[in-house]
Each structure stands twice: as structure tokens, then as C-alpha cells.
Amino acid sequence: MNTRESMTLQKRIEITEDMMERFFGEIFPGEVSDFSAHKGLPYGLVYNLVHGRINSLSAADYRRIFGEEPPQQEQDRVNGEYFRSLVRLWLFLNEQITEKDLYGEFYKGRRSVRKPDYRIFTGATKTVEKRLERIMEEKFLNQGLSGAEIQKWIKEFERYPEGERVPFERVKPILARLEKNLQVHPSRLLNRWIASYESGELKTINGELFEKLKAIDRKAEEATRRPSRAEFEKLREEVYGSREGFSLFSEIEEELEFLKLWGGRSPKKYLGRSAGKYRRSKLKRVASWRAEEILEDCEKFIAAKPDLSVTALPKRYRVAQWKRLTRALEQAVVAKMFSKDKLSFEKRVLEPVYHTKEEYASEGRTFVTAEEGARILRMSEKGFGLLMGAHCENFRKIGRYKGNWTIPDLYLFEVAGANEFPLIRAKYEWLARKTLRLYFSAGTCLGADKAESQKSESRTVSAGGAAARYASSPQDSHFGHPSTEP
Image (cartoon, rainbow, N blue to C red; front, side, top):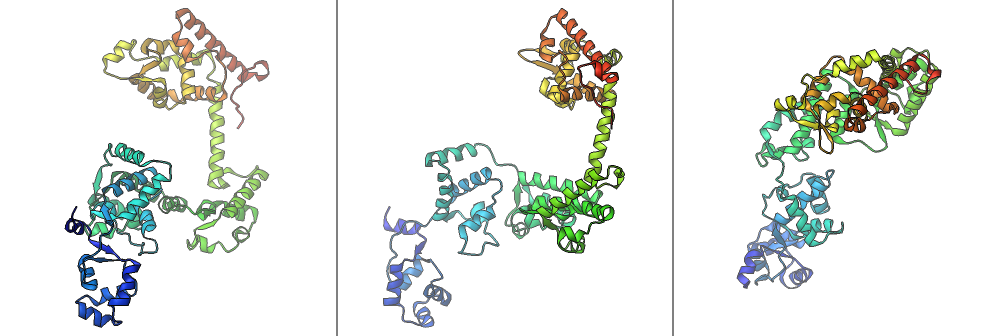
């Protein structure tokens, strides 16, 4: 490359200490205004040069000041494509990092980072400083990757197209609703200044960010239908992030009021100040150790007062009590499900509409694995396995076996839609939780011959009868049973 071609690429000349020594010793007379007028240069340029406020000069300005061709230097700016590939890969691997964070790291101490210049990331500026490329490359080298491995990772990453870009016009209504409902500025939601979008400088956002905004918007809409200060502040924390060592006041506000009304405890004792500022939302967080102390005292007080009405308890304890009562009622119903009559009832509910796998296949339905079947019926895999074992004759008639069992999804949707199925599901989920060994399993029963199937069915009935007997006379049986005591 000849000198002229080199100078064409070299747009800026980095100012060195030798240049400045020569400038002050041989060229600059001592008056900024006189020198700028003599050389035909802007006053501001000369002033900034004299006071060390600039790091480079254009080739034309260098010629005017020093009266010679600029020296050849290593190119300070490079094509930005490699830099932007490194940035995209780094952000993909570190979801908590944003472009704004990287910009602050690049220019800390050099320029204001409160309003980042995103053009280096978007490609609006074709070239970037070489040092930025080195900074990004160093991040990967510090993780133990070689230069060749970095290139390979970038190639693999860019094989998959970036998520669909969404026009900003589609995003504006969501941002407006969130600003109204959550009182969050759009710039915070976008992780960059909204002015860049409103001015038309940026026109789209990443599809993944759009999905996140829609999810927050749905939650915010739900929160406005059922207003709750706690839910409102939790949603704001999803956007702004939590503060380490602090908890939201709204999360312990009800417990604090409970201790005041029923225990005669002063809120100031727990908060170290009046609760008024918290209730007026001037203060939103309390130290986590204070929140833990409030919850501990609340639990101790409730334990010491078992005669307290459930409706008087704070919501989290009230919900826990209702769950215990509901679980006890469910267990009482399940206990009555262990009988021959109830097994006949189960058979009737689980009887397939079609009687062979060929009939289900002719409907064009897909066959799913046991794991997928459990999800369709909203059961645990263990509970579904117990159900398959107890009613293996149904599953053998309509299922397929090729190394593992698959079941028609149509059959599963039919069962899930039956009004009586929740009772059956509760029974087998209880069995799964208690890990009762009822001597049947989906694997052995489904793979057995007809005689073995009949034996297995007989054992199932016997086991069910044993559990039913235990429900009425627990001392006579080794089977556990659901407690009917609330």
C-alpha cells in the first residue's frame, strides 16, 4: 500500500507527547487567538489542543499546524462488524448485561455515559475505535477461549437469525399503558432513550424484548383489575430490579397491621420509625432483617393463638390454612375411593370412546409418550404411571409399544374433559405422594400377557380394598391412608 492509500484510510492522527513538545517548543507563540487566526483554524480547536482536551487531529489540521505530512500510524479505527458480532454474542451469553452497561465500560472517564451513543452498536457508524474491539475480544480471551474459538462461536451464533424485529409503532401503545399503569418511564423499559425512537433514528426493537414487554403488560392489566399495592410494587421490581438487603414494605404491611391489632405491637418497634411514610409510599423498602423479624413474630403469635379465626389472619397465613383444610377434605374423599365400587366407577370414566388403537389412528390423531400424557392430564409422571398400572387393560388396547408406550392424545383429552376425572386424579396423586407400593406398575402390567394382567388387576383391587379397610380401621392394616382430620 502506498503512502497516499495509507493516508486515505488514516482519517485521524493520534497526538503523541513528542508532537506536543514540538508544538509548544517550536510552533505555538503563546496566544491562542493569534495562532488560530494565523493558521486559519477554529479558535475552539486550538484552545482544546493547547489545554489537552483532544486526543487526535484530522490529517488536514495536522498539515496546517505542523506544516508537514502526517506521520504514518497504526490505524486507530477499524471496520465495526467484528466488534458488533462480539457484542451480540456477549449480550446473548450474559442476559443481565445491556448495551448501556458496555458503553459505560468503554467510555468511563472519557465522556458522559448517561446518554449512550448507540450508533456503534446499530452499525450507523461503520467504523469503531480499535480499542473497543480489543476490549470486547479480551472479555472472551479471559474466559479461556482462543482467537480461533471466538471466531467459531460467532459463526455458530450467527447461523441462527436474530429474533424478529418489531416496528416501534407496535410497541408504543404497550409503553404508554405501562407508563400509566406501572409509572415506569419507557426509556427504562427499552434500556435506551425513547427519544432515539421518537426521532426516527431507531425504528424497531428486538422480538424477545417485545415479548417481555407484552408479558409485563398482561400482568399490569391484571393488577389494575384487582388493585393491590403489593402486586403493583412487585411488577415495578421486575423492571427496576430488587435491592440487596431490602424487602418491599407492601410484602409485610398486612403482617405488621395484624401484630398491631391482635398483638398490641407497635409498628415503630419493628420499623425504627413511624409507618406513616411507608403507607404514603414515600418509603417503599425496609431492611430484610426487619421484615424477617416481623414474619417470625407473626408466626409465633399465630402458633400461640390457635383459636384465632382464619379470616383474621394475614393473607399468606390465611391461604395456607385454606390449603390445609382443602387438602384434608380432598384426602377424606380420596379415602372413600379405595373400594371395588369405586374401581368400577374409575373403569367407567376411563373407558375409551374408541376400542382399538387403529380407530384412534384413523382419526388422524397423534400418539404421545407417557410423560406428555401426564402433562395433558395435569398429573405427575408418577401418579400417571400408577393410573396406567391400575387400568392397564385400557391402555394396552389403544396404546402402542415400541421400546416405550405411546397413547392417543385424543383419548387423553377425552379423559381430561370428564367431570368425574378430578376425583380419580386426586386419588392417584395422593398415592404418588405417599409412595404406597400397590404391587403394580405401568411397565410390568402393560408388557405382561393376559393372565399376568388379570393377576395384576386382582392385586390392584385387593390393594385398594386394603387401603379402604385401613381408612375405617387403621390399626389392622400396614397401608397408610389420607388423614381425615383437618
